[in-house]
Length: 176
Image (cartoon, rainbow, N blue to C red; front, side, top):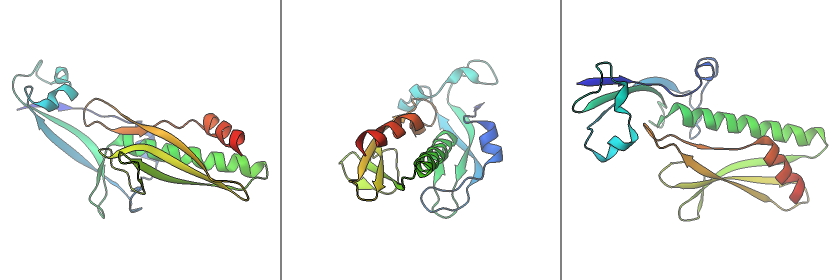
């Protein structure tokens, strides 16, 4: 069987950050994840068969990479997805700090909007449409800032939400 090893995600963030599950808060561990894909299957369009150790492979290939694993809720999380969630939390904290320096006390809560337009607390890429940031400030109406999901069309199809600090600050200042 042909074996293909690959890795995504910033290696410095992977090594030097502590990673916690967004569902239950448990510390995540790294495990090796293997998936066998045939070149004739529907999954083949998401995989690149050119990086085999033995040239261009013939027949099914075993794709091997590391992922995060939550021992409590048994979730497997792609590196790109987890790092994006952590980066978004950092951006949200910076936006809150920005407004605190200006004397405005805001609170930002993360929720997700699923394909049925229902608001849920947990994120599953198959059913999520948007990341919703609920922005609350004293004596002002609650704002909702929606960020659409971006699913990367390769390998294990990790997803991410692109939040920009500058755009979030402009949104809050415009409507509050």
